[in-house]
Length: 332
Image (cartoon, rainbow, N blue to C red; front, side):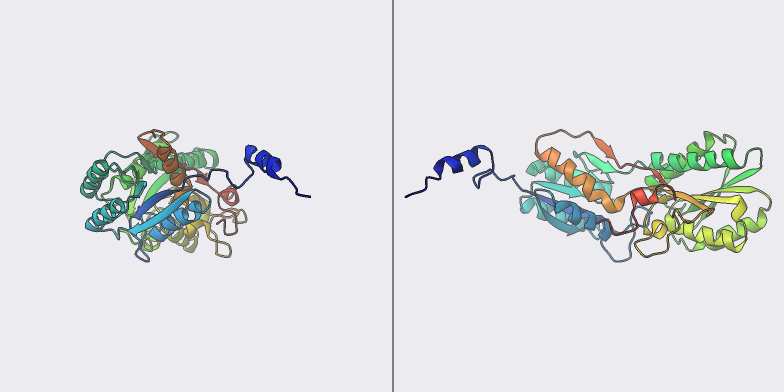
């Protein structure tokens, strides 16, 4: 007796359960990273190039993409060469992370000529939609948090404010963060002036600089905005050494591992750190960029027109919500 299986197989195929189901197309996407040199941080925050790349590697595991990776090494000429190499390999889309405007203009022209779609990461790329932080908005979140804290905890008291970080950085991102912090604080404390402590790009200097400031200013409540998390850590050390925990509060920018720690690292922002001088840090999520950018790339490749700019989500992370944003285990 011969079993007749053809009707069953046909039924399975009709339901989409058989081997003949069409496979989802896989796209070849290139990511040219800003700088993967060990120890080099990016955008004035505590994230590194490898942090950004790792987010793409992890995000790509569940998406129909084949990734090609390039390291621009902070060199505009190398960025141009990497873009040319990606075009030569006929990638479906290039994600370009390069800070040099002239190089990005040339890369944009070559991509247009070759009809290669692209997304600019953090820094504008000619003819391409941009994904990156809202620096002014992130600063405003920090400023509002400081102003609200003073209004709630130190009403009718004399309050001073201090800005700590690499203030000599001529980049527009730093200027926008500073402007946002100032405008955010002034929503509740309109007459407040900021003292500036410039670390010159060396976060460790925040300790000595703030110590000198605290020794000159006694009896005032002090709001401290730091432009990076490592400066916040050193500022906290100065406050504790000078026993000023009761009249100082810090809000930082970045939310990198310097401030939220890892699975077994010391955490400055932690639900158990009650009464700590670090109120929180505004998250930039640079270690998760891949999870946001690759879906945008796939939308483009399926014919969708993206808005000219897509902003990173920013939120103030404190001890109350840090485990929701960065649970105390390796999320990845």
